[in-house]
Image (cartoon, rainbow, N blue to C red; front, top):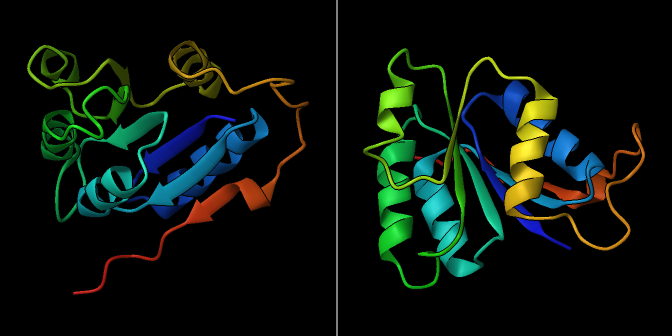
Length: 143
């Protein structure tokens, strides 16, 4: 079963993404910032990273650069999500595989995610079959 690391500082969107991707059959870990994303991805490389670009502590652009330079995570696909008005231009300068501009449709995100990391045998799951045991929320980073 494929593992996805979701990196999003907005708790509502983070929970929505985590639950939606779990519905599709993924094991999902959610972290609130780029610093925790780098730590978790290097410790246990996921099959895919879905990461917001604008976050506290370490933004998604810098986190993606660190992940690309590390041998354990260099080949992990990165899907960036961003509401930045010039986000499409960032696609050419950031080491990401796909840019999904906010706002986005969850079905569009699902097509991108499944193309980069198929959920696994017997998936996707039926609609409404949320498996909270497949979503792990990391606590916010403490100063």
